[in-house]
Amino acid sequence: MIIAVNTRLLIKDKLEGIGWFTYETLKRITQQHPEHKFYFLFDRKFHPDFIFSKNIEAVVIPPQARHPILYYLWFEYSIPHILKKIKADLFLSPDGYLSLSTKTKSLAVIHDLNFEHYPEDIPFLERKNYKYFFPKYAKKATRIATVSEYSKSDIIKQYSIPENKIDVTYNGANEKFCPISISEQDETRKKYSLGKPYFLFVGALLPRKNLVNLFKAFDDFKKKSPSKIKLLITGEKKWWTKEIQEAYREMEFKDDIIFSGRLSGEDLHKVIASALAMTYVSYFEGFGIPIIEAFNCNTAVITSNLTSLPEVAGDAAMIINPFSVESISEAMKKIAFDEKFRSELIDKGKIRKLDFSWQKSADRLWKSIEKTLKTES
Image (cartoon, rainbow, N blue to C red; front, top):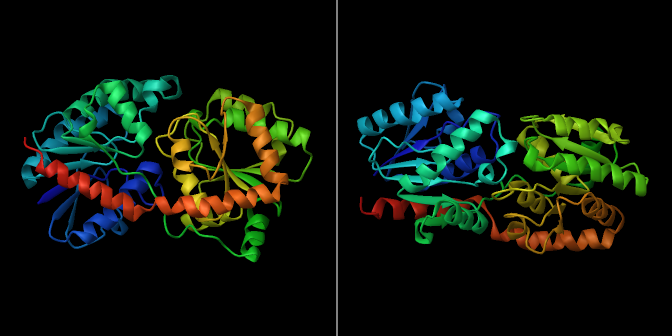
């Protein structure tokens, strides 16, 4: 079979949630299925690290699709042309975008529909593009894969898609995320938090990551429970809004917040493994990979009671109301000062992490590919 893959989000040193899903699943699938030919379709010069095996041929197709108008040109003109040229049996799109102008069977991985629930969190043109095209993509797709039962039910409800057309693959965490020694933890804290214990946030700094309430909650925690604990924010200021900036500016303990920017995989691993707790209190997520990364590192987790997050965390995290500053603050206090409770959470995380791995994700995605190929046109 000839399988074409949209790999435009495989960008060296800039992988985020969907990029990691693409990288981890396709690395395994291509190596485990040498009997098939894979065409990786890039919109710019690619890094050789992304050519995982000999059965992959990389093709660069202009234009660089980084704007809604360019998305349209790439998916509706460039993609149909190359799919026809290589005689593809399947078009796999890990970021959910499809071409409406091709008859090639397609598998869209739609991670979540955050733009349907919180459109105001997304820049105007991106929002319009999502809301116009994704209902069409969902109906156009031969099959759909998604990363949680929550997202599956949301796609069914929002777009009236039959339940038997959608497969749940879940996400995983890289095997490099694991516990580290006490001495390594000490060194990491010296490097990133002035040697002090810290709560940690990992992710792109977007409105739905709920940084406004995280900042307010940390301020409340510090006022009520004086300590040397810091809050380490790791990630790019992708859509740093006025509301986020104002919440930060109004903090009494803003000097105890440290912005590390984006970290390499190795440094991110050490930062997670050295944290007092992962504070992942988004009000909307399709999955939440940092939760599993924290479990793998024997790090406690505070997360939200909304969307997919309770499904992913199970009983292994402290579940809070993301719209309640007090709820987040009290969770911080419990984690920080109740060592027995924190240890119990970590032990539960050791069990919970066994349900998720990138190998399991790859196996599930491959089954979805097989179902798509077998579907009658």
